[in-house]
Length: 439
Image (cartoon, rainbow, N blue to C red; front, side):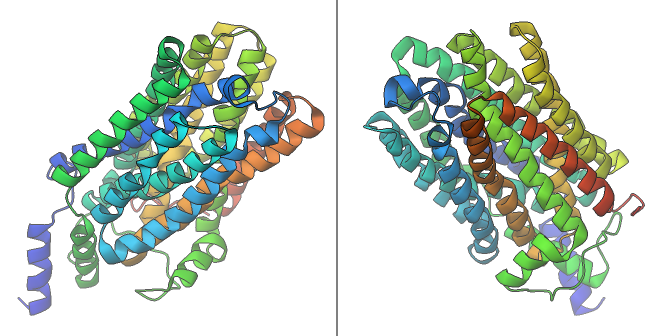
């Protein structure tokens, strides 16, 4: 056995890939993303509805209301890319811990807020937390799992995060009614941050060695399982500019996946801020609004337990296209129906649509990105995806402001999603290593 083969064999023994063999770390990473989801989910019901009563935001000033989403999206998008590059230098765990340290000011800013701009500032820190912490849970799970398990791995990751988003929206709606919104957000957020930071420090392991071991096995030809079709055209260790340009524009499949990420966050912006306002304006109380938005989040989260594994069997592209178009149908239905039960049904449809596309976009990017710059590729995709929050808030806010009605923002979003699905269908190739790469 040559020295290279011996090193690869040692790496395989020390850092084997697979969910079962790394189950403890897989569970701790899922617990981390659950906490990240709780932190962002606490805003989903309470803030849009109480913005006028507690912070003086005019009900018709949609762009002003959406300013906190713009700040969040711009910061989170940029830091997704920074986190990806940084984690290849200093490690995944260090970036994860930095994300939780950045979250500490959030509950204090919300509790002592004197104007809506304090909430905008709090969301800058929330964007840092999301960009660092959520990014690292995804990257770490991809590091420790096999290529044929990535749909399941990302599905579990996003299930944990978005089930927590839905639960937090419902929980904080109840707490806000009982104790008031400021006390509710302070207590809830402080508890989540403390638990997450403690568990990250004590029990989460660094997974960068798994990625390096995988790269060695691919280089030596000893990697087991289906052979990935890695995107070529970049050196083994490209610069940040090279990765960003290649994933954003130069590679047709990567670029199609990036624009689909933007489209899904435009839709999520609508459902985060304008959908609760729409429901409240049509007679639903805060708790019932919490149920509808919570069902959307929980359906999105729970459905990813089957949509992720589905893509491991049938490929990534078909679920992504179906998800974009089903989400468009749910968004359109939300303004065509009336009543609590029909809105719950529309929320379920939108949740299933999100579940079909969301984890499988991540898995598709991970499929074709080489291990040496996979975290940077995921960071670039997540940059565009989460910048979609800012793009969506700006576009939908301007549309609703110009028309003086929220409904117009729903129709713009539905059309955007339909076009995005067509783009993926026409431009993206199948990325799953065991599926044929149909054009």
